[in-house]
Image 1 (cartoon, rainbow, N blue to C red):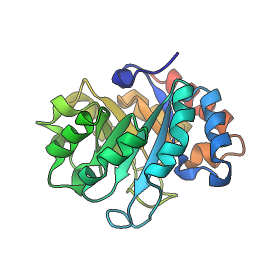
Image 2: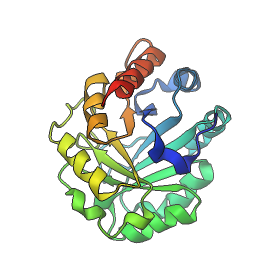
Image 3: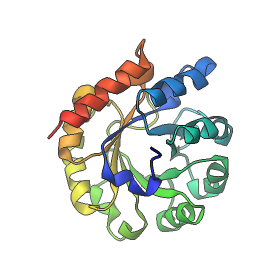
Image 4: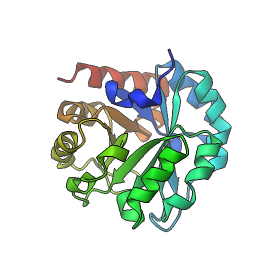
Amino acid sequence: MSLDPARLRDQRLVVPSILSADYAQLGAQVDAVLEAGAHVIHVDVMDGHFVPPITIGPLIVEAIAEQVHAAGAIVDVHLMIEQPERQIAAFASAGANSISVHHEATPHVHYALGEVREAGCRAGLALNPATQPEVVAGLEELLDIVLCMTVNPGWGGQAFIPRSVAKVERLRALAPDAAIEVDGGIDEGTAARCAEAGANLFVAGSSVFGDPDPAAACRRIADAIAAAP
């Protein structure tokens, strides 16, 4: 059954991030997690300015979008870039179904979220660890997703920040109609803790694609969040 992007709030989902995939085998690895039950594929976009690394752009989204959509899944783009409003149309045209912009990356957050909606995508607001959850106030009508960074963006291999759990609880209270997505250091244990706090989308990169069997890793995290209270 296809996942309606408008219903992202309705279920707990593992969201494999292709940032950690083997790009020589990208199509096969995306297929593996889709066959394992993934309904959302996460694309981390970094510009070398907002965060130090440079990663991927609309061409990669376009390369996987048809494959993902054919499986009834959606493409979830996370823009870790300055002035994200300049790039929204390109990612939407490439096949993104949801696009998250960082609160810290633009002085025009309300405008950027509106541009995402205008482009036909679900709109997400991403928050760095030091950003207070109360910044979502006044934006609720534009928010389909609130993405809570549970590590500092841009650096791989970081440990999950424990106080993120309390932040997730606060975000769930402040944005009850939005999906709450967590990203960074997510594995079976941390995903379960975040699920109990109110998160329902769990971005997992190295814990999935760093495993010798990404499909099995995806299923283990799915089992952990399904079992959480």
